[in-house]
Length: 295
Image (cartoon, rainbow, N blue to C red):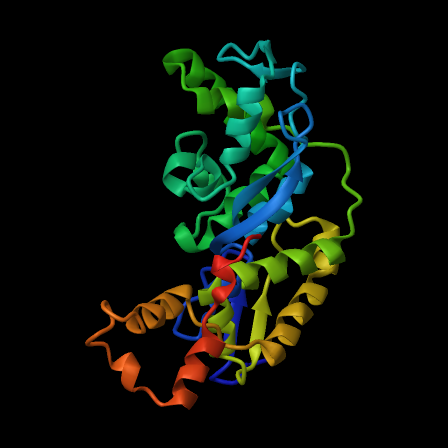
């Protein structure tokens, strides 16, 4: 079925749909700030906030077992022999950091140092689809298992050769956890809310197309779990509901600029002092002042 010409495409398969009608920002694979509190047993704090690099990173991480401090982990060396490693608190912290925006699992260039990234996809690899990395390394499918073995083996060799602590953390901690029975619906609903809340530009991208039809492209990604595929319509419905209710939000820089303009000395030559009251109220109403509030 041919879609209307003005239909916007949200591509959750590889986020490589082409053309001016692609909403890259709404894909799960798109980079964004996703601060989520996760349990960290064995560390100084029982939980910590991880600033995941995309919605896909935040969702797929729940498949990974949080490292058991003092426990052991096995990895294959260059001779295909099993080597036992002891997990430290430093390993666990460094491993978590790799899911954040400056981590190995959020950069195609850095991740390419641990495996052949064409094993994930032969398609274009850019910043707009870094969530694919998390999708594959955390998958419980056979392809995900083989990829983790390749990554941990290479990471171990890299650590032995250079003493790279990040490589050691990846070799030690990249393991699947027990089955996670957390409700997919409640989890994905919460993550989508966080995505709009902490990323004003993404919120406004949805608002700017609030009157356009949206088409969702997930296709049959070989790494998706059956549950993920079955509940994909539920997630798409969340976006459509948000589309009809979203409001435009001003960046906190708007509020800062306005506040500086009202300063007795610094705003002496600012046109803010000549604005009509109604326009001032509109600026204040649109500014995102939550930036200044404690979370």
